[in-house]
Amino acid sequence: MKKKIFSGVQPTGNLHLGNYLGAIKNFVSLSNDNENECIFCVVDLHAITVTQDPAILRENIRETVATFIASGIDPKKSIIFNQSQVVAHAEAAWILSCTAKMGWLNRMTQFKEKAGKDKEKASVGLYSYPILMAADILLYDSTHVPVGNDQKQHLELCRDIAQKFNNDFKVDDFFKIPEPLIQKEFSRIMSLKDGSKKMSKSDLSDLSRINLTDEKDEILNKIKKAKTDSLSIPTNIKEFVDRPEARNLIGIYSSLASMTFEDTIQKFSGKNFSELKENLSQILIDNLNPISNEIKKLLKEKSYLDKILEDGCQKADNIASKKIKKIHDIVGF
Ligand code: TYM
Image 1: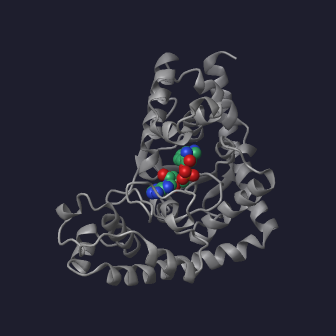
Image 2: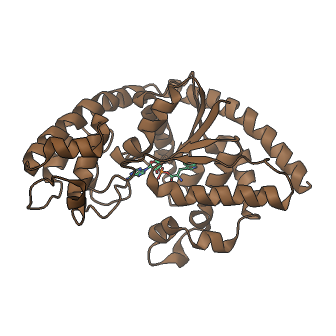
């Protein structure tokens, strides 16, 4: 049985190292394996759960496609499309919102973080967004979903929704129960300014993240200014307790070098941070520069990017429209 891989990325600009190491790098290796059928979705319906400028959103959708391709996803082998153009997503999200329970959604920590103190002012879409995510995954009978650690709870919710729908309508195995694919060793890239906070596109400080389009000088500057502590690099994993910034920098290095965390500790143990930072800047530049150059080149080829989306949408719609018809039938429409 081929694995059916599905994942999504929001086109909200500033795609960063967290998106790359937590998700996109994994998309690339999964899509290079001929045993897998891969679908990568630019989730523009998710993006409008917070205010967007329409002209910028349109550009960001293209930039996300460019990032997928520049990172190594071949649009001839994988389906790349944007969510809003396949109507079944919004429709399935509505139907599944009648299966999901308020209590389940109330537990979602990401909504609490994103809505902040003033929940009353958050959009209803921001609250129900994990249901749309479940619709995305379930429409394609996805078996595996590669994501960063921050999406783990949303995937558990997706599994609960699928299970409940199958039970409620006595349609065993209609929705496949998807498995999360989350990097084992280092699945959460933290802010360069605060090791207790996730690296995020919404952080007001650009120094907190490495953007995939950053130039060499920006990478050097950001790593130079990255927060550390006054001790030297730990000699074993236990010594990383209470040293989140050291853990993050070592983790980023190990991910980029495809080395285990343990081996990376051995490489730098006892050394000072300036040596780690020098090596880290270099490996970041080596890995990200080719991607960044390719993104910039592809962004000039708008009609090429639009054509990829158009083709991808047709293929995705072909699959999703069949599934939504069956859903109609099951619920009694
Ligand atoms: P989004 O757009 O916030 O992030 C895209 C992917 O990047 C990962 N990621 C990180 N991984 C490690 N460290 C970080 N600091 C970091 N920041 C982001 C995310 O885990 C994600 O894998 N709701 C999703 C998009 C989505 C989706 C889906 C994913 C919509 N439908 C269906 C999978 C399947 C989101 O907002 O991701």
